[in-house]
Amino acid sequence: MKIRDEYYLEENFAVNFISEILEYEGSSFVHDEIVYVLIQKLTVGNKSLTELFELLNLEKALEFVIELAKNERNLSENLISEINRILLIDILPGGIYRTHNNIGGVDFTEIQEQMSYLLNDFLNSDEIKSADWFFENFMEIKPFNYRNLATAAIIHIFISLKLGDIPKLLSEI
Image 1 (tube, rainbow, N blue to C red):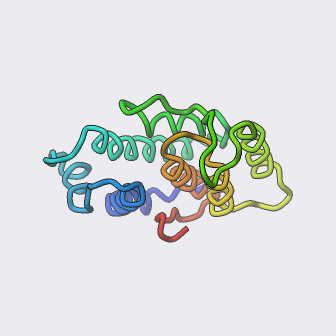
Image 2 (cartoon, rainbow, N blue to C red):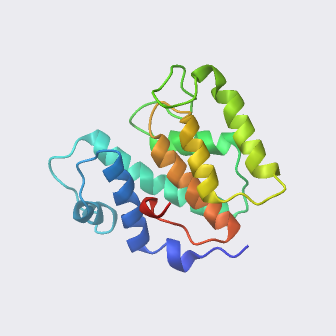
């Protein structure tokens, strides 16, 4: 497997990736402010600590999966939970499947079963499943209380790297 460091480690991709996710999640951060925080290491006023942690945790999760893809780690339920946990550091406890129903998601009593089925189907299918396929199916389940979109997008990056594909921005999925 050849990891495409030159593409996805570029600051521009990381900033655009994080910017899109934060926009979808309703953050008040704008693109230029994200550049100030991530690239120039400057602080930005009028932002809550939660929003700042959401931004910084996205960067941590992105770096985490890049390293794991380089080290040939495979996708697992533990890895998925760890990604969600990283995304929620200093915000809320993360990495735990939800215990209530969400509108438009799978009934919480079926989450463990659905996630096991999704992962088994992805890893053991006779046909190679794409990162897009996993993203779409993960978002139908929405297994966590918070940051399912960010979790799915980070997993998409991980799968893309493992398959040797160029990672996509959220708007390209």
